[in-house]
Image 1 (tube, rainbow, N blue to C red):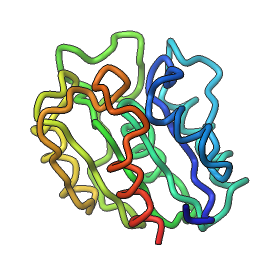
Image 2 (image 1 turned 180 degrees about the vertical axis):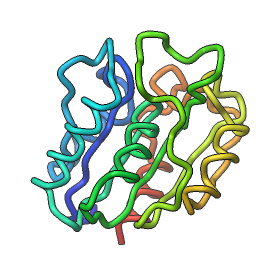
Image 3 (image 1 turned 90 degrees about the vertical axis):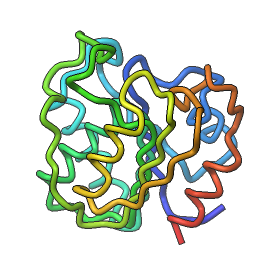
Image 4 (image 1 turned 60 degrees about the horizontal axis):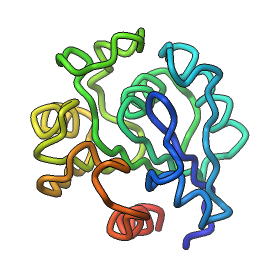
Length: 177
């Protein structure tokens, strides 16, 4: 695995023990989870501030790996920060206006649709109940991200049966180079 620092950004409720993000964290010591004060009632401003602090501590060689709600966190952060990072991987971008978007998540609507100042990859599933391909196809071009559609993989989480998701890890390794 690459030696760059990698920050893992879980979505709402954090990533459980069988989620690929948690499995990666156990297997790769250079990865760190960006902790949130409240995983169950996320507020975008608070989450963005936590990400800003984590990136400042981690440095400009950092790679971000966001899942679900954290993709919106990352977009809001990218529009406001002066920090530099190496790259970002955004997995399962949710639609904040969609019917399945969690009501307890506040401030994440209207994610900035401006080009990121770093290379990025958006990975999307065709049957993601929280956003899927329509949302990914809106966001990826606006962010300047490469879009990879992986077929029917649900929300690309533990329930998707991915285990430690070696394909996703290979994508991250390529992006981190």
